[in-house]
Image (cartoon, rainbow, N blue to C red; front, side, top):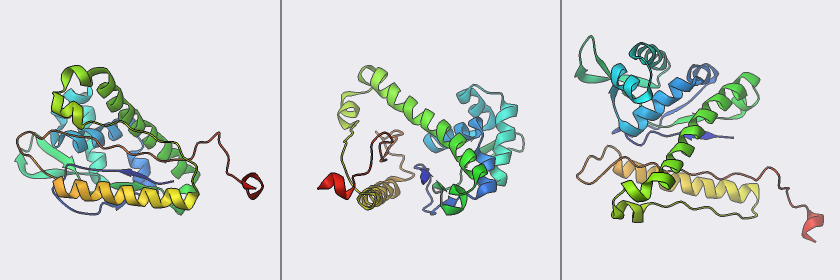
Length: 210
């Protein structure tokens, strides 16, 4: 199983990094995932402004920013801030979790679950906000540009993999074309995509198909 924690706000086209076990353990903390989410969605912050956004003390956010910096997840913004007030941004590119080495490690699985649970919590919160507040707070043009869609199908693992590759390439291209855009009328937008087998379903056998 692979999960891509994507940074759609960077002006860099770096391909990102594949997290190893030590990197996963460093990220496997709810507040650190929240920091990554905030920097990805809203851009650069100081420890103080992150604390205000996340409801945490600046001391806590400062500590976790330094830990994330050690593992290459965030970096200081060059030419901005002072010795007392540093500005931080996401290191460009997606963070990829998964692969045979981590999938076979119990520690890797545990760290991945912590990260993905927090990550999914924020994905779900974003959708809930749109459902509950979107029609009253968004301008009509943004309401018409917003989509929530799902489909249920029977496919093979190979067909699902092919679809995932196509969607990933499409979203990556779209993000690259608009990455770093700060034009009049633009605003932060979140693109979510999930495709997975239904766990209480079953794989069709030759006997079932006959």
